[in-house]
Image 1 (cartoon, rainbow, N blue to C red):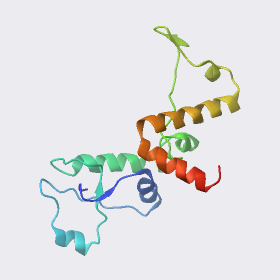
Image 2 (cartoon, rainbow, N blue to C red; image 1 turned 135 degrees about the vertical axis):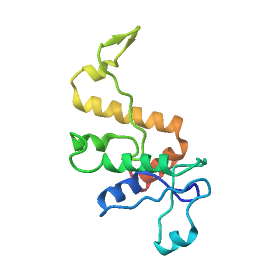
Image 3 (cartoon, helix red, strand yellow; image 1 turned 180 degrees about the horizontal axis):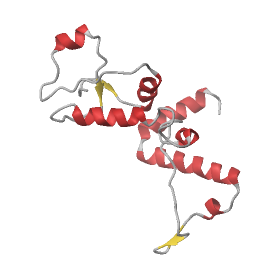
Length: 150
């Protein structure tokens, strides 16, 4: 775990979850001796463009992201397919009960029972949220969509 490593993303997490296992080295302050990294052909991983005092917290983040993809950890594996980054988009908003809270209602389509309309609404919400909040993701998603002719 190091700021100079490959940026951790869902693709890396999926690869690690599908693999045989991994050893995580957590440097403290100045990191891990380069000779150790070279000897083990270490994949250096970063959580982002910031520096922490050690690699322990990033290691926990990586571990949590990987473990939740292992079979049996999440009750319904199918729900993982709808989460942020699985399709290159951020996830749509979620609503629970009651149907109205402090004058704010659950969108009508979500209580309609019409599964196709709900799916369409979720997709549009994901696209709108991604376009607004993460233009970098939106650009990748849009260009991939264009190259597929969709």
